[in-house]
Amino acid sequence: MRMDGYIRVSRVMGREGDSYMSPSIQRDDIEKYAATHGIEIDRIETDEDVSGGKAVDDRKLGKLIERIEKGQTDGVLVNHTDRFGRDALDAALAIRRITKAGGRMIATTQGLDTSRAESKMVLQFYLMMAEAYLDRSRDHWDATKRRNLEERGLHVCGSPPFGYRRRDEVEPTHDAEGRVVRDAKLVIDPDEAEAVRLVFELRARGETFANIKRRLEDKLGEEVAPNRPVRIVSNRVYLGEATAVVKAKDHPDREARERITRKGAHDAIVSPELFAAAQHMKDPRVANDGTLAAQTILSGMVYCASCGERMHVKGRGPKGKRKAFYSCSRKQSAKCESPANADVKMVDDYVLWMLSQDEGGAAEAAGSAEQEYLEAREALTAAQAELDHWMKNKTASVAVRRQMIEEADAAVTAAQAALWKLDDPGVGDGPVVKIDGKLWAAQSWGEDRDADRRTIQRYVGSVTVARGNRWQPLDQRITVKWADGRDPVIA
Picture 1 (cartoon, rainbow, N blue to C red):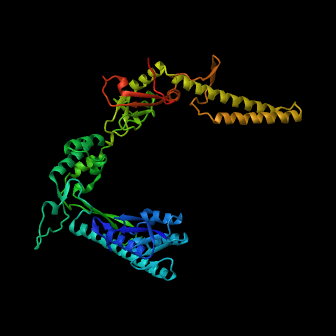
Picture 2: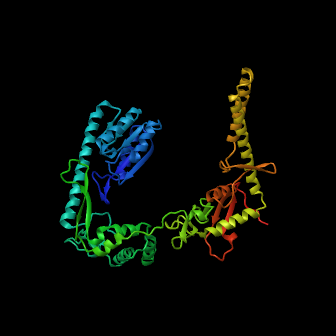
C-alpha cells in the first residue's frame, strides 16, 4: 500500500499556535506508523504558517487528495485530525472525496482510519472539537487585538512600519530576572522618519511616484520596492493612528469584520495638513490620443537586448509635441540590468533602410509566400464563383447540372484545403494587383499607419535594441531578424 503524508503547523505572527507540534515530530509519527503497518510513503507535504481553517484545496493537502482521486496513491497519513483541518464541514467533504475515490485517511496518534466503520463517528467528533478550538482561538485573538489597541494603543502588525521601531527594541526595560519586558509600542526611528517625511513632501509638491522612488533610493542608499512610496503615502500610521481589523461587535454574521482606530496612539511623523496634501495629488497623465502610436510602425516587435522583454512605446515633451521612444518594460521594476531606450524614428528608419538594402533574399522570400497565399485565395474565390454559377443555372439539363455542381463543390473543398495549409502573411482583405504576372496585395505606404504596420510585419520578425548613447553606431545597438528567421545581408 502506498500513501502520502501531510504535515501542518499553525503560527500566528511568529508565535506558536494552537496545539503546536513541530514538523519533525509529526514526520516521525507518520513514518513510524507507516513502517509498523507496512505502508510505503510516496511523499510527505508540509504546510507551515497555515491555519487549519483554510480550505483544503488552498493547501498542499488538496494536491494529495487529487493524487488519491487519480489512483496514484491509496490515501493520506496525518499525525492528528486537527492537522488535517479545523473546519468540520470542509474536512468532512475532503474525507468524503478520499473515501469515494477508494482511499483512506489515517490519523496516526489517535488510531483513526476512515476505512473502519467505527472510526467515522469518532472522527466527526474530533473534527467538530478541532473547529470549536479554532473558533475560540480566533475569538481570543480578536479580543486581544481589540484590547491592545483600545486600552494600550498598540498598532497591530507583524513588524513595525517603516519609520518606526518597537519600544522594547530601542528603549528596553528588564524585569527582576533580567529579561527584556515586551513592549510593542511604536517609537520613531529618526533616520527612517526623515525619509518618510521626504516622501510625503515630494508627493505634496506633485512629484510622480516613480521619481519619489528614485529619490527615496538615493536617500537610503539602497533599492526599494516599486510600491513602497505608494504604501507610505496611504498609511495613516504616520499620523499617529493605530489600527486593527477585528471581528465586528454585535453583528449577526459571525464572519463580519470591522476596522478599529485609535488616534494619538504613538508619535506622528507627518502633520495632518501634509498628509492631506499628499493624498490630494494625482499623477499627471497625458490622455491617450493616439499621437504616440501614430509615430511607430514597429510597436510589438521591438525587444530589450538585456532582459528580452518587449519594449513599450512612451512619449516625452509637452502635450501636442510629444515624441515617441521605445523603453524597456521592466525598467520601472528594476528587474532589468541594462534597460534600453531608443528614439522611435531612429529605430524605425534604420530597420526600413536595412530592408531596402538587404541582399539575403528575405524580402523576396516573404514576397513569395505572399504570392502563394494570394494565388490560393484567388483559386478559392474562382472555385466558389463556379459553384455559385452552377447552383443558379436553370438552362442546363438536370444530369449536367448535377455533375457540374459535384465537380465545382469538390474544387471548392480542394481550394479550401490548399489555403488552410498556408500561413496568412497579413495581407488583409484589400485589393490585389498583378505585376509581371505575379499577384501582390495593393497596400499604399504612408497613408494608414496600421496598414503600414501590417506590411512591415510580413518582412520583419523582431528588432532588439541594446542600451547605448546617441553617438554609438546603430549597427552596434540594433539587431534585426527577418520574418523567416534570417539575418540581414548588407553590402
